[in-house]
Image (cartoon, rainbow, N blue to C red; front, side, top):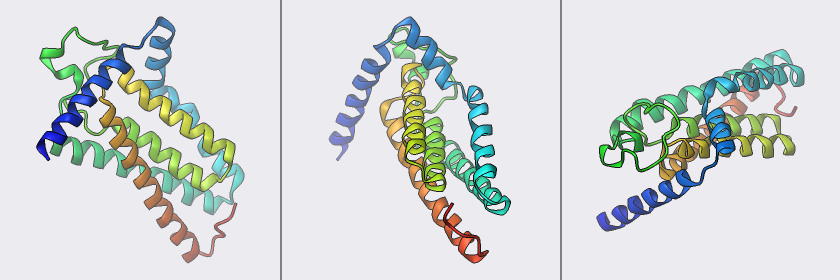
Length: 194
């Protein structure tokens, strides 16, 4: 079992160097922009406004609470539980790797597994696509989540496995909270359909 894990980690490192090394000046700008959580505030505002435009006030507030709960779960579980338990160093905190890859941002926190960015954006994509139930929206929000997650490898902050398991955490949290959300809607006699 230990040799399988070691082989997986080695493959993860090779894939990190490959993905991080595929760069150009335009992508450098785009990926740094995608990786910055503050540039997405307008998107979050639009998503929130969309809830109140599309649904009754009561259902919109419940949907917003569900989205926020996903963020709380993904952020707490990824940062306070998994990262602190696993303690996998970020690529930027490996002294032996200094100068061997492109780091386009500050070093960041010490640990990388799992990616909180990936968990948060895929949690948002999951819960919001299940709430909105629109094919175009679903495709767009998942493409956005994938681009943001990839940007974390590109800028040198995360390994591919950090992203993969962060994605899984986000999807699980999104599905779980959506299940709770539907139960609450039924108990409060709010129609589940849009």
